[in-house]
Image (tube, each protein chain N blue to C red):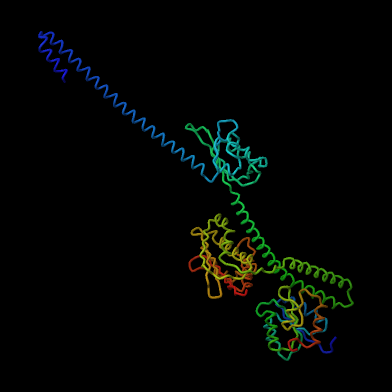
Amino acid sequence: MPAEQERLYIVDDNESVCRSLKLLLTTYGFEVSTFTSAEKFFGTVSDKDRGCLIMDIHMPGLSGWEALKRIVEFKIDCPVIMISANKTDGNPERALKSGAVGFLLKPFTDKALVDLIHSALEKPTTALA
Amino acid sequence: MKKKTTISKRLAIGKTKNGEQKRLKGVVAGLRKNRNGLNDKIRKQKNALVKKNGELRNGAEKQVRAEEQIHIRTKAMESAVDGIFIIDAQKQDYPIIYVNQSFQKMTGYQKKEILGQNYFLLYGSEADPQVIEKIKQTIRKEKAYHGETPNYKKDGKKHWNLLRITPVQDARGAITHYVGIQTDVTMMREKQKEIDEQREELLHVTRVGKLAEFVSSLAHEISQPLTSILSYAQAAQRMLADREPKLREILSYIIDDDQRAAEVIHRLRTLLKKSKPDMKQLDINTLINDTVELITTDATVRNVDLKRDFASHLPLVTGDRVQLQQVLLNLISNSFEALESSRDVREISIRTSLQDNDTIRVEVKDTGVGLPVENIPKLFTRFFTSKPDGLGMGLSISRSIIEAHGGRLDVDNNPGSGVTAYFTIPISTKDA
């Protein structure tokens, strides 16, 4: 358990997914903020805020891939984990190539997600490497 | 005249008595009368003979002409491409009394083997007895028969026969003969079978495509709640920590079942995974012609006029033949349905043109009622449909196929009436 609470951001257009992940990840000691669109995330979170972003791919408006592209372009110091309910929307290779730290297919277990979060927070993001 | 003078002289010179003279005058008058009567008779007989002669000549000419007619008719029957035969209906076992050359060629039997035989004996032992019985019954009822039947040649080779048998009646209406015409439709049937198979295959691919698209959408919709259910249950389990072992057990069942459901969905998705497109260089006009051939019968049944207006010498495009046919079939069948309620002109025109140096444009235009303006933006949304039995996948799949080919697909109302669906497709680069 980290001494200082690590911050997580969840971006998913499905409110129930946001709520359940927040409940689950809070039990692991994370401080979790949720957003139902990438636009809302960009509008709220500043460059100085640090943490790990868990982002859905298939969203109305800015898609997960477009949002990731922006994060990489603007060199925002924030590791990104891509999640999707559809295999054809993405895969771990594409996620890593695009600058994310990983990809999880919905539904995923808490273990898979938490392991990925820990490894993302331990090493510097691909975007800045 | 000389004779007359002599008698007069004799009367004047020889006989002088009045009575004698009178008698003689009477004799002369009688002779004159007789001679005139004889002349009349001769004239009449001569006229009768001339008339008779004319009649005979006419008759002979008529006969020659009639023979010519028969000769021409026989020749025509002999030269006909269809097999022609005549059956004697007044004899008990309906023997064949005439066959033309094509009939012999079609059946493989020679004239001498056929004449006097019952027609059905020529069908061979493998022929379907039910079909033969049906033909026989129709004939016995003195009706005409029309149908396609399998036939076997003398050498046993099967062919398809379009058979028409019609009764021939005499002046009193009694049936004396049957005339039959048979056409070898094996090639036509094979071609039709090929077209049917191709259409069936294409429809199958389309159905599978729709199903895959449907399952994919469904899987996405179901995976979302499965994700949250799993996370809720795992969160609750962690919150309970060491307390409430029964509740934790229940939560573990929820987690297991959630994961099982997710597994089923992933498997289903893998099963219906799209096959990779088979990209080849294609001539778009040929591709449209091939597709139209598959639905010509459908168009005829629906009383729809299918028009084609192709730009000639179009450059080739690179594409998956089956996928592009799927798109065309989808657009044409949408037009078919749009024309269903249309009473006036029922027409679909398919047009190809070169939009610019790099792009070919294909339009499918109908004369239907057109689309309600508010529906146009929704057309490409999955599950949107205005048809009672529609899935709402067709246009969305078509658009994704065209986009994968580097083109664009859209639908718009015509200025007059009806709808034009069009797509663009880039032309092949030389190294493609």
